[in-house]
Length: 270
Image (cartoon, rainbow, N blue to C red; front, side):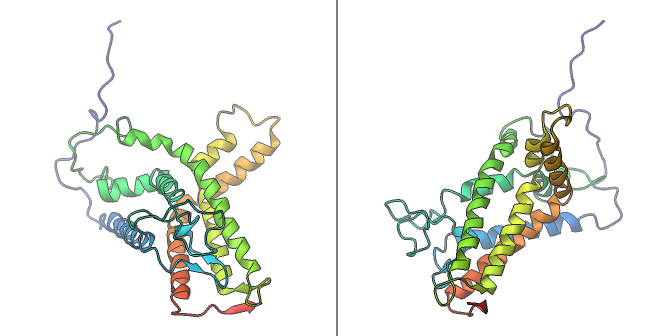
């Protein structure tokens, strides 16, 4: 037998002479995806570095963009786990210990990879549409090789989701009279946390944790039950990916409006 070598990545990729063979509006999906992601990035970046209107002391509402607040300049009461001994300059976010991991978890997410590969990097933009790149190596080289770290960022995301859950839960103990209370802000924070858990637990890495490396679920009924539940969530991972971008924005915007005195928090029970 004659020894053969494997073809280089992308050497057998289909070539399309025309720019596209499509006659439909194939560009609508990638365009809307790019605009949606860009809108969130612009808003979130502006808010993270604004370093103001992130805390409502009266009802203990803390926007998730600033949780946990670890700068010495955090408003009193907002840093529930304490702060570092120095104030951050304007170019460092107050939630410095959590935001990098959240961003990396989202950036390396399987769905978001597909979204920005198609809409931004255009690899590929759509079926039967010519790519602007001459070669293709996928995620076999740096920097895209780092996408494989997603499974480890998942564990950090779980810890941060627990922190967001605590933020939402403790706010119920700060009613108008200082005791238990429920306002619209409590429901907003709670809804956001529930959806964040749906996004985190529907992650492909979570599904692998529950059932990966197993040849059989025989004798492991608990793991099988968990795997089936996570698998059901996994089918809606794209939905949760977009929904949580919206709820994060709306939650932060609601806290901003309350903190700035633009609106008042309707109280359902004090």
